[in-house]
Image 1: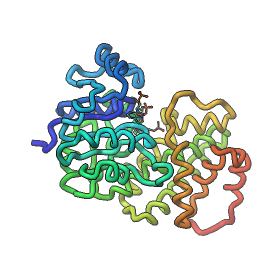
Image 2 (image 1 turned 30 degrees about the horizontal axis):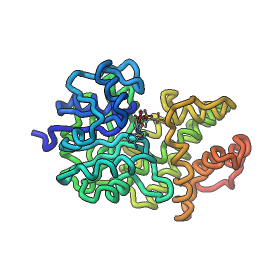
Image 3 (image 1 turned 120 degrees about the vertical axis):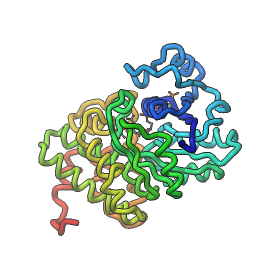
Length: 326
Ligand SMILES: NC(=O)C1=CN([C@@H]2O[C@H](COP(=O)(O)OP(=O)(O)OC[C@H]3O[C@@H](n4cnc5c(N)ncnc54)[C@H](OP(=O)(O)O)[C@@H]3O)[C@@H](O)[C@H]2O)C=CC1
Ligand SMILES: O=C(CO)COP(=O)(O)O
């Protein structure tokens, strides 16, 4: 029997809604918390979230805007955007009466503090047990029950394994890990790199360039990860290489789609969260503070901030000095 019978998902966006279906499929009692009363009431009555259209929520999922109801759960999943994770955890920390696992499901690094998601949780809710879930998983695929595998990490292996037992099912296979930092790095960096690859595809640089850029993107993700203590099996695993491949090759990805639009000289899709846009500046700040070379991510940050044109950034990458592959 699993240690965690009930699950609350904080943040009723596309990913939070998909995760609520994951937990329900795994047999948990599920609460989905939306910050807005009307939004919660609308999902409750229609059994559909406009942020994840076409997906019917099973009747067992309780949708609420009352934090006191959600925080009664045995474990919490936080699925807000990365820059809002601290605000969400601050709110719920006051309601926690026992040490409760809080699983970060956002992919990013906090601006200003340059902190990764589990560090933000540990700071905002000192009695929580932070964990991170990440890997190749589009909300739409997951909610429809298409199969995937992800990584779920916590410092304590037994906790990570218990969380996996609580959420896993034949269509959603979490692998447990204790390499929290490695998992956080993969999820954050791959979004920035997907913007780069989207730009290359939008500029019609060809399938060979797409593969080359994805690979060199992985080289810098891994360089950054190793410098920050990530394990190599995590970097080449589901939350690293796995999610990078997905995001750099699929039009379903909002980060890839943002890059594609930029590369084509079009307006980026409106109202779509592309975390890489927010992660790029803080990722390169962190990298340069530790003298880690991340030329592809730097090019993305320069394009997004208007410091470079797309053509200048592409030419800058292609004319770097030749060097040994590592
Ligand atoms: N979509 C996907 O396929 C996947 C997304 N992720 C990650 O999950 C995170 C969320 O993405 P996604 O669900 O797609 O984004 P969405 O834009 O679909 O939804 C974000 C949700 O967060 C809510 N929210 C924003 N700020 C707060 C806050 N302070 N407190 C509570 N709720 C808040 C929003 O509420 P409101 O509706 O009121 O605006 C909205 O419902 C991102 O970090 C993303 O990288 C990870 C894997 C897959
Ligand atoms: O993280 C994701 C898939 O694993 C979702 O990617 P996008 O945020 O780019 O849509």
